Structures are given as C-alpha cells and as structure tokens.
Length: 183
Image (tube, rainbow, N blue to C red; front, side):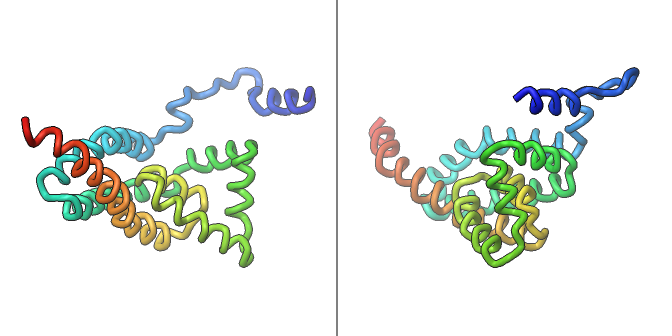
C-alpha cells in the first residue's frame, strides 16, 4: 500500500519551480466547454420538450420528433468531443479503477471476442445513455468515426421511441392527461 501511495505521489509531484496549470486550463478546451454547456442545455430541456411534443403532436409523432432533436445533439456532441485530450485522460483514469479495467479490456481486444463484447455493449449504450454520454462512451470505446456517428445518431430514434414514446407517452396518456383534462 505504501508503494502505491509513493507512486501516486511521485506522479502528482512536479519538478521544483514548475507551476501546475489550473484545472480548467488543463482539461477544458473551447470545444469541450461548448460540449459541456450544450450537455446541460440538453439535460434541462429534454423532459419539458418531450412532454410538450407528446401533448401537442401525440405520443408517437412526438417521440419521432424528439428522436430527431436528439440525433442532432448526438452528432454535435460527437463532433465537439472528437480528438479531445480530456477523453484520453478519462480513459487513463478509468484504467486505474475496477470498472475501468473492464472497459479497457473491452476496448483493447481486437479479436472476435472483443468485437462480440463491444457489439453486446452497444445495445445498452444506445438504449440507456443520452446523446452526450453515448458520445463519451463511443470515444472511450475508440470506435471509428463513421460507426460512432451511425450508431449514435441512428440510435437516437429507437432511444426516443422507447423513452419518449413508450415510457413518457404511457405516463402522459395513462396518468397525467386523465387528471388534467377535467380541470
């Protein structure tokens, strides 16, 4: 344990007279900053927009429009986070954690087993993660650009059909609308 602490301390220590750059200057570049701001905008507006679309357009047309909006977000996030050095640092950081080692093991194998594991991991990544986290995950997987765009942008439609159409539309039509229509 002392050896680990000594290695981590040595890695964090800088030579005498060298100043460490502030956190934001080390990690947040303009494109990364734009992606983070846009991520928060997407996070705060997704639910109200989905509810508005369901209430005005209907359950399934609203889900398709929401999927189109999320597809645009997905393409923008993939573009903004492309070749970002902060993601390389995140990947190195996760490699030192238990779950991160599983991620590194998943992405570094180039044989059939590695391709199969990545293919199985893509379904939950597309159906559960939002556009920003999908972009981060696909960059951490070191997925090729055309495949990442096709899966992330194209996966926005089934993602929206599940979460906006089925789940949120079901809650709207089954619980919320019957309560507010009589007011």
